[in-house]
Structures are given as structure tokens and as C-alpha cells.
Length: 634
Image (cartoon, rainbow, N blue to C red; front, side, top):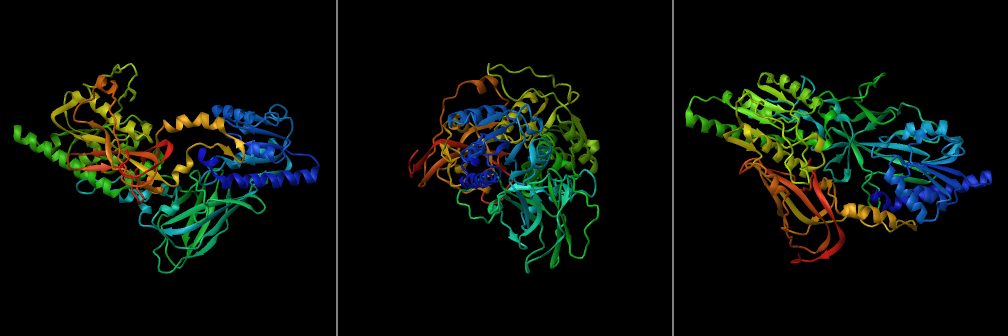
């Protein structure tokens, strides 16, 4: 939200479009227009419409707290008599009840990085039918979808499970059925800042689809079939980058083009990359865009092939793209990460096996027992491929359980896998310091003891909260302590939360005080949002942003997974502080944190920020005040 408010170019373009349309209406009808603002947010566009001469604005917003804030901002700017805030989705508005007349002018900004994901088209279709006069004025007036064919070695690693060969012999696949290694689900768009991806363009950009938004939109539509020339001496393209352009009014355009020279960078709209399946080759390529109400997809073929008459949009066949977010899929597809886990699990099992063999002899690999407590994790499959014949996988999600069972069957390891759906207590510890009641666990292994407890760690309920993921494994490990053999290995065996101070030249623009937006008083917004902003941790993939370290890297919290969690110690007060010393001149914007997982004493899996595309995301805590720093300051 703050990113949009601080995006001065966007605000100026919408203000100019409102001015053009309101003046046009007044000239034609001799009165100011009734305006409908759908998805008003803080009420900015509604207030801009009043400033440009609207007669009255009816602004709807579904999120209650945001409606209350918009009402306060409207009152602060002395526009309460000219703006009516409605806490309803537009689909529930009724002419004669919520607004007295059909509106003359519609303004909205319900677009995302792939344009249609927030329901723009069905919203417009309903508004034309129920809320607007015949032939209304509409902002935006139209939209254009652009594409460009690209090649990048890193692109396949984003969503392609075909490279995820696991286990000591690299024979374990993440495919649940033969033939879906190249899952069509990887053709779904992945939003990112394209200028940060190390890739090369393989063609000129092209207009793939044009949408008229001043008439009721169709439910489905396809663009013209294009023949796109490929650049010479470039590898066959394996991706297509999408961006859009909104025509707000004649000559007033807002674009997410990665080459646009926009000094006030923003972070609310990104480009989107589609992975081609398979890559295409030749001197020319055929491209055709298809859309429904919520998604844009591309049909890309070699020039010698014809477009399909009844083309069907690709869907996920492996299950992974359907169940998990982009960063989780990317992690599962990362070859380096997979090899690290394979080596660590093999090393741990070999060590335990050797210890047991020396102590009592006659112990084979199949006698070992493994517990895998990460949701949808491949670690149990790696242990089974090594030779463990009894792998217990703790799966709380029914869908994850089904997918994992299918993956085990596809790898002919289903006889070694036993799935358990444990009623995990809530991860959060009660503020009273009391240990929550735990369900019994002694019956899980039928009296046996586990020789390896492994996790990545991952829990789909905690996606986007890496600190909770880290503590969740500690909690689960402690809960399962009674099931561990005295010589059992735990992977990871410890974790450290690392931190450093950074300068964020572009991302920092999305946070901070707003003050005034186009001369509108936003002090109430600052009062409502400032404290939560600086007390909240935000998760970002910093490789997509410009950052510069200003301090050394320091551990600020450590967890020893070889020792069960002590609830009393965890909830006791801890006044220790970690200081960071600055080693460079710059502007201190934020502290960046991440987690280093030590799979054993020598093997590290780190989510430290990188300069190149990577699945890891970091935790960003913005400072209340930007501070100019120099070396040796603390």
C-alpha cells in the first residue's frame, strides 16, 4: 500500500486521467459526473476525483479496517460530504440503496503483475450491467499485454522439477507419475523484477493482446497469432516475459515495462516470466496469447507447427506447483540444495549404521528407522533410496500426504514409507509460559526407536515465516524426543539467525512516512501504519533488489536441535543485545536477517542474500529513521 502511495508517477497519471475525463463529461453534459471508485483502498483516487471536479464519489472497499482508514482520511481532507465510503465488494452494491444513481465515470486500479489476477474483468462486467450508465467513461480505458522471448540458464531452475534427481545414486524423482518431469504447471507465471535476472533477450518485444475496458469484457479471448523473429546467435528461448500497459486516457499511459525510465521505482507491480515447455528453436516462433477472467497464458510453437484449434491451458500434473508457492517449488528444484541434503542424509545414516554395527554387530541398513517431519519433503525418499526400509513421514495436510505417497510409489519406494498424520499442537507457545498439552507419541513406531530425524524444515502453514519454521522444527523435535535412539542423528543439528545492516536504495522507497500525497493530508495513514511497519518483519528475495552491506554479519539467535526445547527458558526474559559495527559509509535503512541451517558440523544450507537469482528469501526489519552512517559506528 505504501509503495503505491509513494509511486508519484502512478498518482500523477491517474490524476491527469481523472482531470481529462471529468472535464470531458462537464463539457458534454453541463454538470459534474457521479464517480464510482472500485477497490478504493485508502481513498486516494476518490479524493483525486473530487479535487478534479467530480460531483460525488461512491468508493467501495471490502477490507473493513481499510474502509475505516479511508473514511478518516476523507474527513481529514474535508471531503466527507463529497465522498461516500462503502464497506462492500462492488458485486454487492445496489443502485437505489448504496448509491442513488448509476455512475457516470468508473475509476479502478484492481490490477496485479499479470494484470487480471485481482478480478478486473468480472468486476467490470458486473459494473457495466448493474452500476454504470450506458456508455460510461472508464479509467483505465484499455490495456495492452506485451511479451518478449528470452533465454536464461537460471530460468528452468525456477519451477522445473525435471532436474531434481535425488539420493546417493541420483535415482529419486519428484515426479509422481512417469512423464511429468516436464510438468506443464511450470508454464504458470512467476512475478519478479526482470532486470535482475541474468538472461538475454531472444526477440523484439511484441503486442500479444489488447483489451478494451470501456465496454463489457468477454469471459475468454485470444490474441492474434504472431510470427516472431528470433535473434541470431542466441540459444533457443526457454522463457517469455510479460508486462502490461494501461491506457488511462488518450495519451496517458502507465506501464510495467522493464525498460521504462521510471525514476520513482516501485515494488507493487513486477514483470512475470513464463517458462517455455519445451524450449523452441528456429529462426521464427509462433506466439498466441489466451486469457480467461483471471489469467493470461501463452501458446508458443515452432514456426513449422500450426496453432491448436481448441488449445487448452496447461495445468499442473506433478502436484507440486499446485500445492506450494514459487519459492518452495524453486527450492525443491534446486540441484545444489538437493545434492547437499542427499550427501548429509547419506553421511548421517552411514555414521549411525557404523556405530550400531560396532556396538552389537549384525545390523543392516534396512534395520534403521527414519522420521521425516517436513511437509512434502523429499528427505524421507532419500533415506529410503539409501536403504532404510522403514521411513515414517509426518504429513498433516491430506493433499501433501497423497502427493508424497504417489511420489514414493513412482520411485518404487512405497513399501518403505509409512505416513503419519500427527495432531501437531500449535507452534506458538502460550504467553503464560506453560507447555501446551501434547498428544501421546509412544505408539507411533510400535515400540521401536528412530535412528534419523530429518527436516528441511518446511510447513506449508508457515510459508513466508522462516523464523517460525525454524522454531517449529525445534518444537516438533522436542515432542518426538522419546522416539529417538540414543545414537540418533538429527538433520539439521543446529540453526543460527544471522543479521547485518544494509542500505536499500530502491526497496526502502516502499516504506516510511507518506506525509502528503498529491497535497492530500495522509498523516492519519502514517499514524496507523508507521508502528506496525517498524515492528513487523517483511520477507523479500533480496537478489531482486539493490542492497549494500554496511555492517559485518553477526549471529543474533541460535538453536541447538540436538537438545530438546526448554519451554521455561524459551519464555524467560532475555535482555541480551547484539550490536552491529558499521564498516562502510552509507544510509542505514534496515537490518536483514536469515537462517543458516547446519545439517551437520560441516554442511551448511544458508538463506543468506545473494546477487544472483535464488529461491531463498530474507527477513527485512526497516528502521524507523534512515540514518547516515560511517565506519566504526555502532
